[in-house]
Image 1 (tube, rainbow, N blue to C red):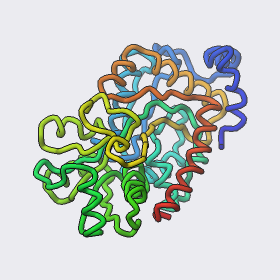
Image 2: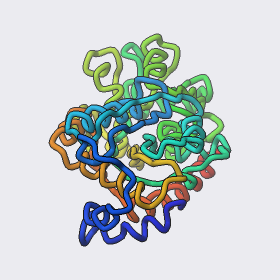
Image 3: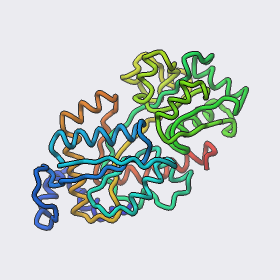
Amino acid sequence: MKLESTMKRLSAVGAIGVASVLALSACGSTSGGTEAESGIDRLNIIVPADPGGGWDQTGRAMQKDLQDNDLVGNASVVNVGGAGGTNGLAQLATEQDPNTLMVMGYVMVGAVETNAAQTRIEDTTPIARLTEEPLVVVVPADSPFQSIDDLLSAVEKDGQGVSITGGSAGGADHILAGQMLKEAGIAPDSLNYIPYSGGGESLAALLGNKVSAGISGVGEYAEQVKAGKLRALAVSGAEPAALLPDVPTLTDEGVDLVLTNWRGVVAPGTIDEAKAAELTELVTEMSETEAWQTTLETNAWDDAFLAGEEFDAFLTEDIAAVKTTLTEIGLL
């Protein structure tokens, strides 16, 4: 990873905390005195997707909680949609402001591979993993499919006549769709997956009966499920989801598959060690606030916080695992 030397420096976090690391290097800090506790008066947050999806929700929740807790003077959010987040990743590569974070996650790991992106996650500075949540498989309320078995049986019979929508190609939603077919013994080329870069677009396609089924994070579809406009067939976690406690897991429905979608933040690959430590401390402080814990509960996001060398190692392993999975289900 781009941040190897920085991560070595941060490996002491478990013993003395990131704040202590920052204290050791404070004399070299270029950030001037501001009202923000972190010393960062202005923070840019890049959301590499259109408004309405999980990344957008995460970025705007961070913006609010950082400002409300006076951790930054001002935080701005800019949406750069398209190509599974790789458009935003390319913009991050040219970002000149070191006080910049980009929301990313499992979806981007796959999109980098399927889009053969020139800029890779390995070119960024890993800061922290924040959350994870299960996905949910839904159908329009008037759909004939009452169960996951109904949906998979239809795909086996009609192939690409059954359409499944979700986030960008190669992302968590796409991978889950492919893995469900694989577990059911259905050929990968039977999958008719229709990707959208924003959660709002996939929801509109479902509500307009333009697709047969949809896959997204539980938080993105839960409201429409509770309103009776969508029917949830299963969730992808090991346990039922807090927002949809009555919906069975895929495992409960006989599909031996568990997959959760994680989200985190990275910074430009060009920042120095002191700035990486400062941004890591900022996100760590945010994750420990009461406001962020409320945000997690409200959105039914599981706390999956990792920083420093642990997040760096996790990213390396996840990138390798996603490459293998995409190949197995025929997406590469």
